[in-house]
Every structure is written in C-alpha cells, then in structure tokens.
Image 1 (tube, rainbow, N blue to C red):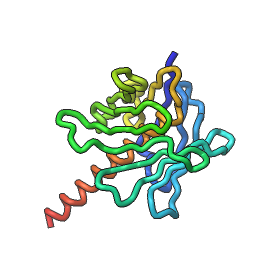
Image 2: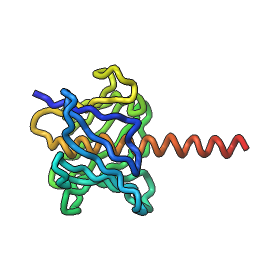
Image 3: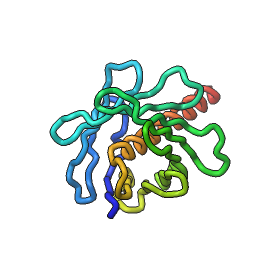
Length: 175
C-alpha cells in the first residue's frame, strides 16, 4: 500500500522551518531552511531531530540543479530541469546507486508523477486536500520516501525560483 504525505506549499522557502505530515496529520519529517548559507539549503530531520538528508542548490550550472545529499553529505541524487520539454514540465533525477527518475506533468499546478523508467513510483497532487496551499505526495511501496519527498520539494523550489525570476524580468520591462 502506498504512503501519502502532506506538504504546505506556501511554507517552502529558505529560512522557514516546516513539517511534512502523514495522511493522518501527524508530523513525520521536519524540514529546516538554513538561512546563513551562500546556496539554498533545506535539511530533512526525523521527529527526534536526526538529520536524514539535505537539498542544496548547485551554483554555477547552466540549468537549474539541486543535489540531495544523505546525512553524511554524500550525493544521493542530482535534479536538473530538462532543457526541452515541449508540452509539460520535466526534470531529470540522476540517482546515485539506483535507477534514475523522471519528474513530469503539470508541476505548476502540483499534478505530476515521478517515474522510474515506465513505472510510476510517486504521484504529487493537490486534489487530495481541500486547502489550496497544500499538496500531497503519494509514494509507492519499496521506494526511499525521504528521497522522493526531497525530489518533490526541490522541484517545487526550482519552479518557485523560475516564477520569481520571470516576475522580476517582467517588472524590469515595465519600468
């Protein structure tokens, strides 16, 4: 049976701490947004404060890139936005010591899947919750939940940065 988590999207920003909850509303993972760092960093902890992994922005790359590192700082996965995705948003996830993943769908509306080859391993959707600022991550059995959650949040962060950059460019044009 798959596991479903709840994430409050408006809380995902650097400097903020937030909780990822299970379907029953119980706090399962804490995400700590580190402020005093050059690059964007989110640290995932269990309910006892033990570090599980972290997401860090890769600087000086051609396209958006974020890295998921384990508790020891070793790369677990590298997430990059695909340069060309004609009909839908797409990110490629290179998983170290595992099968690569593809994130594809309507990322902006939080309606997308994470696939391993042709097999869906997770679905991200707002349709499961009434609150407009909340989305769910449903993860199939046998997956590393913390890695899938980190990928979903990293993609959300990269999308937010893209939207922010676009708004900033539009403001400059209007002046």
